[in-house]
Length: 451
Image (cartoon, rainbow, N blue to C red; front, side, top):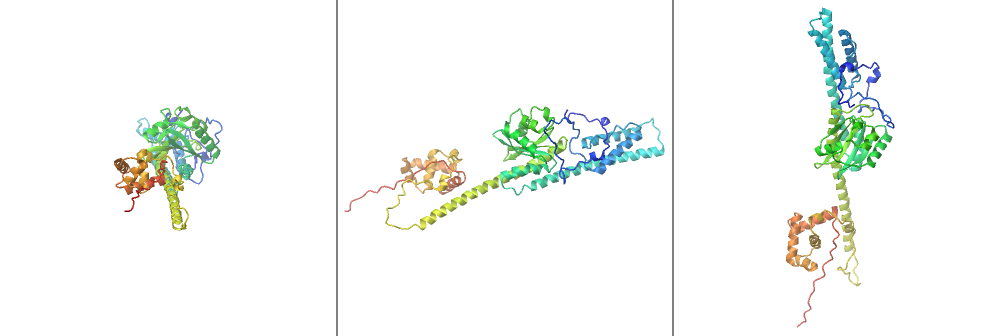
């Protein structure tokens, strides 16, 4: 049964006498919870929901106080704690406080001075413990938020998407999670990109293979579809009995509950982050959801920055290569030897230069301009006038003027030079369609006899 559907009754909880079982190191501390094997299905019942109270002294005081309350009231020790999750401690202390308050209101009990003093002392101690638990929860939440900030700071220097995908899962695990999955969403298809499991790479490989081998299309049959549609993080409990979860990952991971958050870019969802606390043997709660949401928001910005830097570096390298090609061509032109050999026929078709040969055949410019407009623009880049373009394309000069106006409007250019510049920039970065336009033939000159 899901812990979120199970009511917590303080009267049915029991105290563990082994003090060693109370100590659970924080995930962001020097040691992390040891990963447990997942080869077989784990049927162990988990009672811990959310992060447990870390303050050992406070734990010891709670155990003593609850036992003292049980002894003072003459009842069996039934107001106790089985684990030290906040969802367990707070109801137990509230039940103990209420029992002491009921004694003070009882008209059937006559108390001596010493007994009344003891009652007052216990009431003060239980109240102080309630305040201490609340403050401890705030301190631990603050530490987790600080861990998120530190984790995101480690991603600031990442300059490629691959490095970001490699480092992000481990960074998120430092924020209080045991396992993290990073996925992409392309054309509504959910594809696992990275899986990280603390101290258990074999388990990570097994989950990754299950996810990569079964990419899913996001539709109404998955809980993640609602997350993508609302662009908001989600908490999923009772995973093994939930048919709306990813069946392949559910079987491979044996997850009990998890939190998930979208990765955003320019207002759209491009991926997802999933995290759980399987190795710690606890269910996730709303605090875990808030931590993941905070990390996902920062990661989205860091990921977008890395993608932009990678594109800028690629464009810079292409521009530098083009500049080297232009410099080489200029150097060859300036150092060419003059001879009495036959002149080079510039009108003959020449092989395209390396820059043009590397350009892609289908680019964004095809969505902006028609085929004829691309031909006109290509001739404009060669410095041809409207009349020369008309002669080359065998069309009227007025038609050329209309095409030029359309090109200027579609490229949002104020003049021919700006249109040519925008065209060349798109060719350098994205490539242009393969519309080879030969140089126009030299104009014919009529030979007039001398008189």
